[in-house]
Structures are given as structure tokens and as C-alpha cells.
Length: 297
Ligand SMILES: [Zn+2]
Ligand SMILES: [Zn+2]
Image (cartoon, rainbow, N blue to C red; front, side):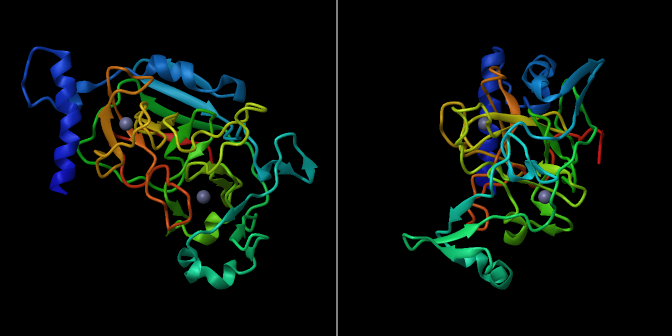
């Protein structure tokens, strides 16, 4: 733990050096407050119906929560939507993760022609996803909270396409492989309220070139969206393609990003292969800042 704390301090120190002549090491994250409003206004996807309004020190983001990319959940009332695709099939390299749920999952696990153990993901929870009227309020200048609040069920952030980001819980339990077998390729599914949401980074990016139907992040440095505390969340990589090794216990650190070149506190998707499933959780644990209000489902 001491080693982690030390690594977290390093980027703060570098930023304070470049900002002034002062070598005062007492500079903390709270002094590096960044106005995010210009970036927020330019990055959310208006084409997918996301609106951004800045008033005073509050930014309000509204969306329907429906994705702009392919998913089996576009199979609305049997009609084939243009963004419909079948559920994906994945090769399982480590079957240990599935032992606990072997009985429930046996109907999903099979062997392909090359002898690989494969799992066919499928809808076994909620058939549909529906539009909501999501609203998320974030501060123009997010700051570190003194007492870090744990993320909870429901919307903890919003991706740039307006789809809610959820943490690593499903209902009142930690996300398990049975619930994950309902994920689409984007690492998302609808919840009990037909509320479509991301839990993890996508596994594949196979549509990026043919129809522009891209997932928020695969294994890259993309800006995914913003959490309710106003801090941005990125893919697993830094802009230079490296993997951050100084993330704090909330999955973030201060460093320059493509959108915030002077540096800002930001989260990254976890780089831990979750339950050996090949999925990477977007965000677990606590907020770095203070979460603002949200509503919609
Ligand atoms: Zn879920
Ligand atoms: Zn970073």
C-alpha cells in the first residue's frame, strides 16, 4: 500500500513543477482543479441525442441511455433493427472461473471445431432495452472529496454516447459469470428495468471501420465518459499506449490526457482480467470527488 501511495504522489509533483517556479511539495490534487465544461460540451454525442447544458458551476447532461452501436438488445419486439447483431461467442481459456456456476452455465458452454471450450453469450435476463430520460449533474470544476463515497447501484457515470456506466455490482451482489453471460460484445446489458448499461470494456472492436458503430473502449486510451463526480474515465491505456502503474485505490491518477493536456485526475478501466473472463471492469470502488445528482430510472 505504501508503494502505491508513493506512486500516486509522483504525477502531482511533476504537474506542480511545470505549473510554477515553486517547488512546494504541499501541492495537492485539490489545487489542480480543471474546468471541464469546454471538453464536456464538445465530446458528448449529440447525434445520439445527448444534450449538455452549462449553467453556473453545474453541467447537466441528458440522454436516453440507448447505444449507438450494435447489440443483440436492438431486437425490439422481434423487429430486426439495423444495429441488431446476434449474441457473441467467446473461447474460454480458463474454465476455473466458471466452476461455481457450472450447472447454470453448462447450457452455454460447448466445444468448437478446433477443440476450444467456448461460451455462447445469450440473453437470460431481460429481453429488451428501452429509452429513459437520464439526467446527470456534474460540476464544471470537479474536486477531490475529503471523504470518498462508494459507488452504488444504478448510474455512476455516463459514456459519451449517453449510455449509463454501472459499477461491478449486479443487483445486491458482485457481478458474477452468470450475469456476465448476458453481456453483448460491448460489455453491456439491460437491467431489470430494461435499463441498458455498461459494466466492462468491450472485448472486440469489429465494427469500427465498416459502419462507425464503435464501442466506448476496447483495449485503448479512449475517453469513455464522465462519472457523477465530474472526473473523466478512460480506457485501460494512457495516450502513449502504456498502461498506468500508479493508479490509486479508486482506479485513477493525475496525468495529462488527450483532452486535458495540462493534466487532470481521471479514472481508467481496470486492467485486471475480471474472474478470468476476459472482461475488464470499467469502474469499481469509490468516487474520487463528490457525486452529483442523477435521475432517470
Ligand atoms: Zn448490470
Ligand atoms: Zn491516465
